[in-house]
Image (cartoon, rainbow, N blue to C red; front, top):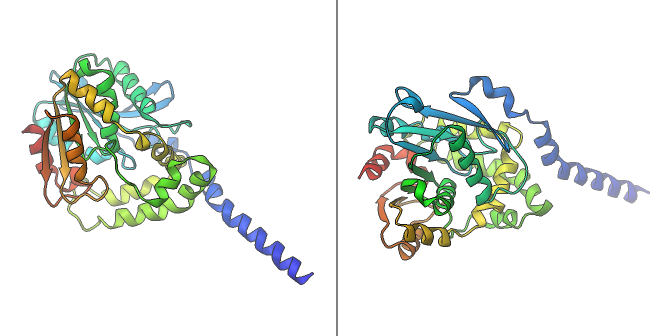
Length: 310
């Protein structure tokens, strides 16, 4: 009987420990509690509310070419806070927004593949009445999103700017490989392991100079909100598993001007992807910022701006 009791206790403890990540996610508050403090506005799109912000003296009513900035996997649109003033100073009207599952935007379910994110961008541009050709700037996973959009709508692009873009083949590590397979095991592993890994990754950059005040704390604060970690998991299993080579080839064939900016010390999207892009699109302008890691938009902002303008 004693052995049986111990066994049942162990099983109960194991079940509770296994359920803890799921229960912890369910206990988190919804993002709508924080929306009163959000800058900018919200658009009611098909899959939910999208937080967006126009930047410039008069926002979207100001005359000037439109630039749309699309952020990456984990850091919402505040990642552009250091870069936007320089873009505006160059005469651009700049639109930033939070991808679904991040920042102040809604957290819809379902697969987060290229079509999911391209659809959000298409709907936001339509909602905002943007029908002229735009410059798209995509950072990390945002690079894969704007690539997919440009391949679908080459006539809507003035220029495509890729900053450390995903979609050209890279290994996110063993945990991400499990998550990328989808299924309950991958989702549970993401809930159990990702928060700690994410905090450690953010902390590793705390001592770096940054043009986004408090960026490490703001990044980690995303973990407080329900739906953020599942959204990251869906993207890892979705758009980040999709090879964008065919999309890049279509962009090259359409003659869309493309420039790509890479961090020489980037360990997330390695510099080796630069050669892969050059193989596909021989006309792309490429620039390497030596010494920059994956956070180059906020650690090497002036040099990124110079590369965009150059």
